[in-house]
Length: 128
Image (cartoon, rainbow, N blue to C red):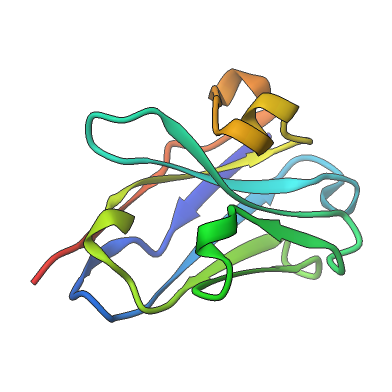
């Protein structure tokens, strides 16, 4: 199984980025897929999840409205559209498959080992 994130980069405050997560080697349709992030010097924060039917999505509360998760089962890819980016959105963004634990989902007490598979991350830097 491979999970590969891409799409990160340097963007100015107020700008947008779209991250991609390509998953191969497992029945993609049957998995929850999450985005998490780790800011410099901080712990791993749960960002968003999309469920297997693609119609049920959820977000860390304060990110709702700026971030949008979607999936394309025809190419086994999950996307995270990030708009109105702020400096505090800077971090390493990970994609991970599986259902998040309640600690991770509710309190962002997360570890990548809580998930079935995960990638190496893609760096997002928001700076002028």
